[in-house]
Amino acid sequence: MPRSSSLESSATSDCSPTWAAPSRWTRSVAIVNKYFWVFRVTLAERLTYRVDFLLTSIFRFLPLVTTVLLWGAIYQGSGRQELGGGSEGVAFTYREMIAYLLLVQVSRTFSSMPNLATGVAREIRDGSLKRYLIQPLDLVGYHLMHRLAHKLSYMMVAVVPYAAIFWLCRDFFEGWPPPEVIVAWVVSLGLALVLGYLIELSVGLIAFWMLEITSILYIFMTINFFVSGHMLPLDLLPAGWSGLLKALPFSYLAYFPAAVFLGKVAAQELPLGLAMGLAWIVVFWVLVRLLLGRGLRRYSAYGG
Amino acid sequence: MEVETESMTMTMHQSPSVDPERFGVQTDAADRSGRVGGLGRYPRLLGAMLRFSLTHEMAFRANFLIKVLVEVIWLGILLIFYRTVFAQTDLVGGWNQSQYLFFVGCFFALNGLVEAFFLESCQELSDLIRTGDLDSLLLKPIDEQFLISIRRFDWGTVPNVAMGAGVMLSGLSGLDSPPNAAAVAAFVVTFICGLILSYSFLIAIASCSVWMIRNQGLLEIWWLVSNLVRHPREIYKGPWGEPLGWFLTFVAPFLLIVHVPASSMVRVLDWNLVGYTVAATVVVFLVSRRLFRWSIRHYRSAGG
Image (tube, rainbow over all chains, first blue to last red; front, side, top):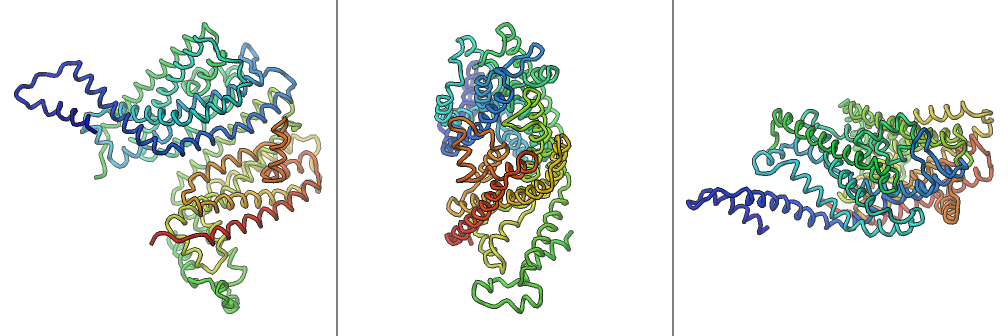
């Protein structure tokens, strides 16, 4: 990594007689540079497993075959064009339902963070967390860059099967939504990514107190599968439950972006919805900082 | 606990390291002593494996309880899902809510049994091949397939059987008329067939690890299979649904696993379908056994 030497030289230049305090700009560039390199190295590493990615993304879509058939039978059995929609709720036609279940997969591509919590818990358990204490590296920033590279590398490969499946299922969509909705959808996917990252990181940081968090993670993932709207649109649940689950942060991981794309979030409610997502990011950012601060105070740095 | 483990290890190691039958040696003497030969060693060994797995599981009681809790949550989610669906419709593929509930319970119990008895063992096969540890198992004086299939018993999924039975009973209580004796008999027979079919598919997939060496995808493939079997056959409709349903009934008969026992009990008792299920079970079991033996013949010991 040739750039790292430039980082080192800027660090060692602190001792030189002609040293002048680095400007705020230079320091900012060095910090951005540092995290960019974390991103770049991880990207190169992850692209090594591109066939694995390809298979994973195909596997992710295969269960949709039975889902499409099941919802077909449900709509046929009900004899109705639309399901849901009770007490001012949002209704879904059969085509919208399948489009929703496809779009939820896209939301989850952004918000799921496989192995993040277990990785952080391992760093706490085996003591390798101390590298964040002795190196000029922030745990939250490092893992965020690591994850962004993971996501980018995954998407670079997964775009092929995703495009193929969406093309095959194009009849379930009413065409592209208006540009402002697409912009809101892209923003909501960005929120899903950051919120998914922060929620999973907070679960991982529980390891300061419990060491082994695999079981908690399993419970969290199982519940999240339902409350995030991965299984079915939250609007189909009874009004009280639907309202509650939509207000929780988990709905931003799957339901909200898909609902935005399908125009199920009214134009006047869209800014509020996005602001709520942002507010949840702030809440989890504070929680992560709090957990990290408190956790480091009781951290014993076991291991070599 | 130590005594228990030790006695099992002793049983394993006291047995001759070369299969006498394979080398044409009569095992009558061993039969008479009742220690090594005879069919009695199979249930004895199975009992020892069950005790050993329970001892292992009870050493991590909290982990065991969490595993059970995850399964309880998952069943709860499934029930909420179907309750939500049946709030919108009276029939799904011709099945009413009580009948469908019975189907879900049947799937949960059957899947719980398969995962308890075979999933971990089959998953471990690729590790045995990669490390070369399969050598020692092949040398034991017992059927290799039996030994490999029952090595690890997962007590964590046993409560699923009770939970599934509870859901089945709840479904039965909602039926207009209780099933007759013939339906119950057909259910018992086809439920056992479902178990054998599931096991046969599992061991056939696991056998492929002899060629693939790395078989981390077994769990994913199994998850896909369980996705196919957890819906009734009637949902396979439409231009591509029907050919797929036909394929999954007559070529790769996954759909017989849960559909036939559940349907025989709570819907239509079709003796032709029951007969076909029994015949298909025999064929699939024999084919999977041949595949297993053929793959073992292609095993080239690796490692030290």
